[in-house]
Image 1: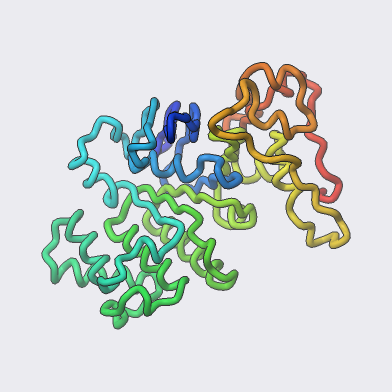
Image 2 (image 1 turned 60 degrees about the horizontal axis):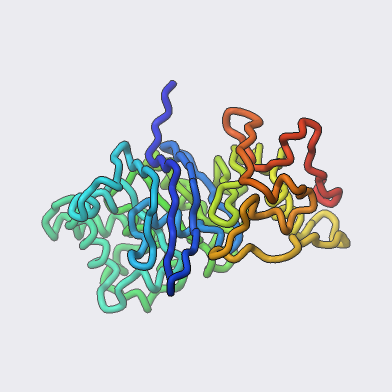
Length: 334
């Protein structure tokens, strides 16, 4: 059975040049998203998650950002070869993005109904009355009464504004949705409602989805696959079960060991020592080596190759050149 990929990123490298200094934001990244599935993109702030998302829509600000190399296929189209006019049609229609802060994504002087209508008119070439009716249907789809269509963003709560942003993103039934920290500013009750709604809409429209987050609890709730990023590279990727229950990369294990243990409240947290490397001065070898308790001289000498543990699971770690190497799982996690 052939898989239907709605997003394929191949060998993506993105750089930012600021005051003569080159920042490697994303390096040689490969990622595929299948229709109807959600990939969680996980990592610390500065790992390159948002830059990867912006590159997928060719929205990396240029200058100072540049997509140095790579192929990005959205529903089979190489967007690196499209004109700006063609890109306008792809964005919103084939691929959409939900940005982190809904207030900065919405126009404060336009009603929410008008903002959804504008998106529909632009992409679906409908006349205003038909587009307005569809906008009202989209509001109801995300749980907002159509009677509120004439209200402005400041009249909505944070959770309701995020629902409006989701309605705009889904107004043209895109095949691929990228959600960048969509629940960061929401309290846990509203967070759960928004995530549940996104899962239902993904299944209803058979969308592919990338969920960018640093919250492993959210990943466990909504994702089918997980890609762990560190210093601009994917260091481990696999199904939810593989990454959570058969962790292979020391950085991924460090993320899990940093979480509180609700079963053992006396267990101490085990934070990852040190900080992420300066992206303008990345080490020659593995970027995680200075913080890794398993690091050897070989780790510092060259970029680690991807070691595959199944057709879906790999980790980029030099330690696996020794067949006997195993991650020492924290006893508090077992």
